[in-house]
Image (cartoon, rainbow, N blue to C red; front, side, top):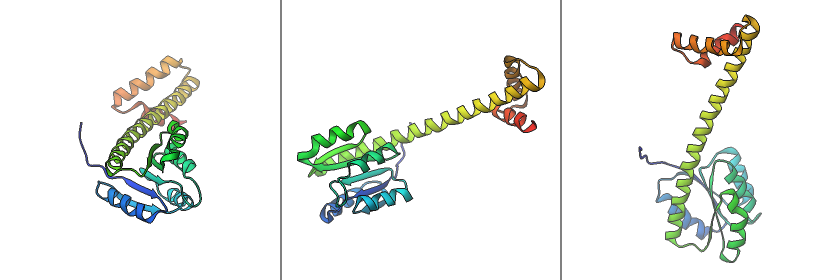
Length: 192
């Protein structure tokens, strides 16, 4: 397995200047880049509509919202999300956001806990990247199957072949010409 240094885009959503300074410093110590800071959920929503972020850190509550709905919405996308909440609300908020894959930390967190949270978020980002890659591969395969099936139906209706014969013809043409079945299917569809 090849180890690479990854860089991540990070969005911090927090309205507390002192907290922002310490969190920004902690982020900059790591391999992150493209750090953005927003001070309300409204501005954070605007920012995320313009740009995708690997990691979203939310320091709740914010002036316009508690941040829970935004955290859930971001986690359903392709972001790893950390929601920091007051200690007295931790259990209640954790119970609400846990099913959506949102990481939760009670405030005030220790420096070590923040470092560990960054590690979890990085791991989560890598897992999401691998799942996305598998998803794209699966979508490509499904698209190829649909194209081959459409080409088979053309061969069946045009040349009077059975489904097995049409499938065999596409496979044989692909092998003989050293191309994919997808390419043969596209040629058949274009000739129609």
